Amino acid sequence: MITVKGLTDIEGILVGHVTDYDGLTGCTVVLCEAGAVAGGDIRGSATGTEEWDVLNPLHVTDRIHAVSLAGRSAFGLEAASGVRRFLEHKGIGFKFGNARIPIVPAAILFDLGMGKLSARPTREMGESACAAATAGPVPEGAVGAGAGATVGKILGMKNAMKSGIGSFTVELNDGIKVSALAAVNALGDVRDPKTGKIVAGARKSPDSMEFADAAALMKSGARLRPAPQNTSLVVVATNASLNKVEATKLAQLASLGMARTIDPVNTMSDGDLVIALSMGERKMPIDALGVAAAEAVAESILRAVRLAPTLGGLPGLKK
Image (cartoon, rainbow, N blue to C red; front, side):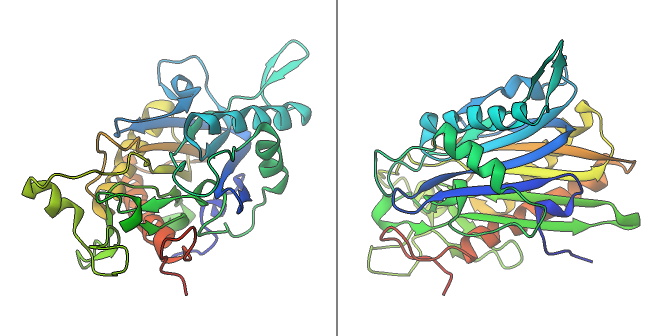
């Protein structure tokens, strides 16, 4: 059985977006206010992160309270300070005397090639995304951190396509669920793993919808000028109980969903990463959870491009 809300199918998870449609950027917040055991996995080579080391199993932090995702490269990290401020005002975070210190890993994607160059995901936008966060169905498409997201940039931005955010849940036995949210901003194309066919990606010309096949172009030795404006960000959550080592393994296994759908993936121009969250008490083998996580990530990526409208001068698949 497959549920339809997306990441918020996991009890205790809230998702909120703030979107700047004029600037074509934004931020997305995943709140886990009760605290989530978390792990992370980075496969790309052009990451932008903050508080990443709290996900390391050797780090003393045992819980995080939110994840902040944003556009505009390193400028988007500012949104995370708004998330911390929002949670602090609610009395959520690591307790130190009378203070509460919210633990908020953050990651950014590079969308400076879309919309207004001066647009920034600010601290206030981070707070607003928290205030907008709900347990309802996750809004998908060109929203939040996916507002300026694109795919298929091997021939430059003019031949790319619009992308965004997608979310999907896989349900296992006994009510165990694994959900994913993906902000897809890949250099490569997006393929349907069931058919191997390109769904969205680099087009042969700005006026064509015929795909150029980024992987084939790379292998051909052609002189390419790929746009450096990339990075796909994924958050995976489960209601199964995991420790930090297991959460890290879940993030690693979930990244296989990226490898199935984005081609090429994890390039020198991508900062692809996965953050995994555990908010449950029941146990299930980590390998089973990993299989479900990879499926949830793959479907989330497909939804991210299929639900993205034409925007910013680039075609999208959503009619």
